[in-house]
Structures are given as structure tokens and as C-alpha cells.
Image (cartoon, rainbow, N blue to C red; front, side, top):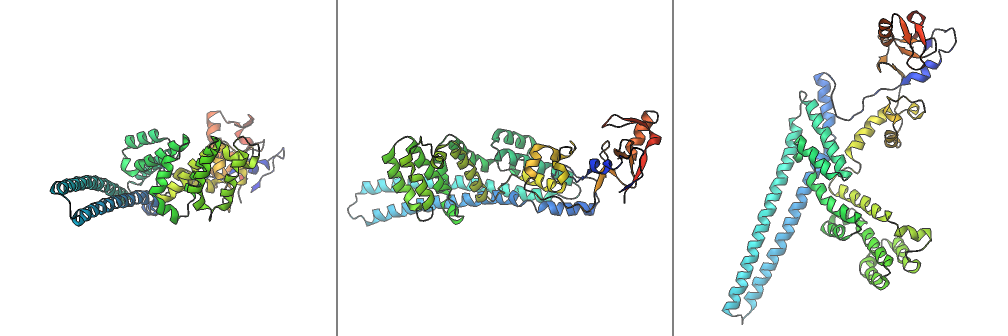
Length: 422
């Protein structure tokens, strides 16, 4: 950029103090006035991000089917076995036979009730999947803004559920009438385990592991092993050493082939005890181990249900911040209008690369509008640069006087010098 020479020679500061990059963040809260073709293109890109939206209810549906199938197999197998026992018995009396058959009929009736209840649950989950498909099919270029608004609320509900704000998430879903479009029921299942772990109870978490044993094994999860280690540590903390040894033989020994080093480390606590000052073993007795289990459970839960490991809100924000992030954003004089001037946004942006900028852009400090040939920059005697539009409006309101909003310098509009962008 070439700037006409100024009397005080300070014009060179303009470029370094006002150069910013303005890119709209990708959070889908609103849609600008665009052409129909660009809206359709935006719609196509939006639908690519809806993998979790469809997979979570489908995974939940498959889990319900498997559970109902296991229940039916177990009950039918027990009934067939009982019938075979009665048929093979040569000395059974008439009354005993009637009693056995009555018991079997009662058991079959119970199975029928369970299957009917399971069928209703499956139907509800199928309706949920259908509602989500209908929601995706309903979007077009005309209602994209409204559809994005609903998606924004879904993203907020997802974030609240992951952060354990269950009641707030439910109220938002109910007030927005999007219960079928969010995973309240799925996270309610997780809530029971999370609450138990926060109360230092592993029972519900172990039950969850048993329920999903085959799938956890396929993913090579060690969450159950971590739970068993923590239960062993609690026995050592309570100085119940014999019970701890028996527990290790029963529940920890089978993991020795794959997790020998961790097992050896934990078993050594029998010698060091819970009041040890040795950092290597002291950390095993710290309360933060329960927080680690909560985080690990959430990660396993998300993977099991096909969810993203990070909240959707973070992913969308990072997508936008990746376009905004420049070295200037982390300097002390970064403007407050830049989202990356906020510490929380800076933390989100830390793992992201800097955006690739082919050309610098000048943004007016007053109007926040881009300065270009249609709205050229003008330089004040103190070296600060603002857009012609902003300075003209200021001069019209103040009888040709210009006041620098940063330094308070007052000058005439005729004292301004046009800056040329090359």
C-alpha cells in the first residue's frame, strides 16, 4: 500500500494498526441474502455435517433390537428346557404336570408383555429416525434460514447434554419443539453412569460395560479395566488388603496379558498404602482419578453411539475460527471486535493452523466495513486510517470536524490524506 507523505511522517502506522481479516464464522445461526444457486450449494455442504444426526438414533435402535432379541432367546430357551424336563420325567404326577405347565404359561405371558413393550419402544425409535429423515428432506433454498435456526438449537442442546446440563437441555428442546431431533433419551442413559461415577460408585458403569461387552471388545476399550483398577484402589484405601488381593485375582488377573505394566503399578499400592508420599503411587489415590473415569466413559459412550468426540458447537466454532486466526489475533493490541481477542476463543483456536491470506484487508475501525476502491481509506494527521464513508458522515455531523476515536485528535476534513491500496 502506498500512502501520500504526511507532514509529521507517521502515516506508516496505519497499515499495522488496522489490518484485520473479516470472515464470517460458520455457526449456522443465519443465512445472508444469496442467490438460489449459492443457497443450494450451502445446503449441500450443510447436509454433509449431519452424520451424527442420523447415526445416533439408528445405533440406539439397533441396541434395542439386540436387547429384545437376547431377552426372547433367553426366555424361550428356558421354556423349551422346562418342557423337555417335564416330558422326560416318567414319574411326574398329574398335579405336578399341571403346576409345571401353569408356570410355563405364566412365564410365556410375561415374555409376551416384554416383547410387546420392546416392540413399542422399537416403533418409537423408528418414528424418531423417520422424523429426522423428514427434517433433512424438508430443507430447501426457501426455508434454509429457518432450518439453520433449528440446527443451531440442536447444536446448543447437544452441547448442554455433553456438559451435563440435562434439565436446561430438555427445557430448550421442549420450548423449541425439537424433542425428536435431539438425543435426550440417549444422554439420559449416560447420566446415570456419570452421576454414579461422580459419587465414586462403579456399579452402574460396570453394568454398562457388561451390556456392551462385545462392542467394547471390538473397539479394544480398556474402560472396564480402569474401573476394576479404581475399585481395587478403593479397597486398598479402606485398608481391606485381603479382599483387595482376592478382588485382583478374580477381576484383574485376566487383564494381565494385555495390561501387565499398569497392573503391576496398581498392585504395588499394597506395599505403599494410601498415605504414601511417592508421587508415582500417590496420584492413584487422588480424587481426580474419578474425573478421569467420567471423561473416559463419555469418550467410550460417544464412540459407541457414533457421536463426535468433541461437542458439535466446538467443531463449528473451530471451523469459523480457522478462517479468522492470524498472528495478529494474539497480539496485545488485537481489536476487541475480533473473536480471538477473547481467551475462551483463543483456547479453542490453539490447535488450529493460521488461515491462509493471499492479500491483507483493511477494515474500518468505526463502521467495521471493508475499505476498498468503493470505500477508500483516508489517513488522519496522527497516522490512523478510517474509511471515507465513516469520516464523511462524521464531518457532516460536526461541521467539517473529524475526531479520532482512538486518540481524540480533532482536525478538519480537509486535513485528511487519501491512502492508495496497490
